[in-house]
Image (spheres, rainbow, N blue to C red):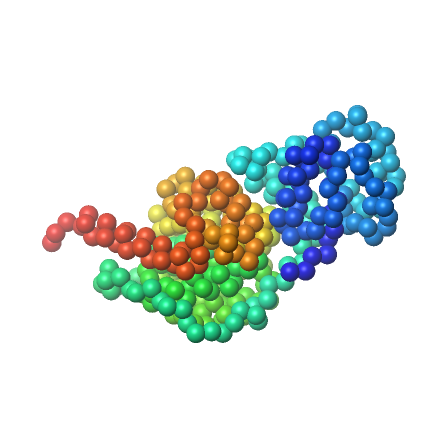
Length: 343
C-alpha cells in the first residue's frame, strides 16, 4: 500500500479528534498530527508539511484567534467539519464517515492503494469442502435461486480466492463481487480468482446473466442493476460514493432487483467502511451478513466497520466462511425438501 496524502487533524475535544483521526486513517490516508488548537506547533504550517487540515471545533468563538492564525499561516487547504461525529456504534456513523470521505476525496483525491494481483502465489489447491448429497440432485437452472454478494477492497483478492478454492464444484450459488480495484485489472482478477477452482469468473457487464457456479465481478466504469431473471443491466450512471464499484450499492441493487434470490452478503478484507450502510438493511430483511475475521485480514477496517453495526452473525477465515456457506445452502435445500408434499 502506498499513501501520499498527509492529513492533520485539529479538534478541541479529545474524543472528536480520535474519531476523526480513526476515520481518516481507516480510509488509507496518513494522519501525521492530531492535536488540540492550543498545542499546535508552528512547524506544521510550513509549506509541504501537510496536504490537508481537517478541523472540528465545538466552540469557534473560543478559538477565534487560533482560527485567524490558521487561515493566515497554513499552506495546506483546510476542511472544516460541520458537526460532531456520532459514536462508531451509532446507526448514523457510516453515513457521517461516508460524507467525510467524499470531502477528503474532493480535496486530496483517493488514497493510492495498489492491489498487487501478481503477488497472490500459485500454490497447491486447498482442500475442497466435500459436496453434500443434497447438491447432487440439483438440476441446472437458467435463473439463479441464490445470489450472494461478496464485498472486498485492499487484500480482498487473496481472501476471496481462498474462499472460492474451498467451495465444492456444484454449489448452487451465483456470486456478485464488488472489489475496489482499477478497472484495467478486472480481466486479470478473473484469471486469478478462478485459477485453482471450478468457479467460472467473468466481468458482469451490461447484458450478462448470473448463473449458479459463476462469479460476476461488478464493473468499475458504470453502476449495474439486476433484473428478476438474473440479467445484469447498466444503470447508465457512475457508482455512488468515493469508491467504485460501491459495495453498498451492489448489495442494495441485488436486493432490489432479485428479491428472494438475494441470499446474503460476505465482507472480506478491505480499507474503509463500504458496505456498512446497506448490510444492516439486508440483515433486517432476514438475510445473513457475514464478515472475514479481523485476524485473518490483510486490512480489517472494512469488515470491522460492518461488524460494528451489529448486523454480522458470523465471522471467520475465508475457509470458515466457505464452510458456513455450504452448510447454509445444505440446510436450505433440506428445509425446502421437507416442505415439498409427497408425490
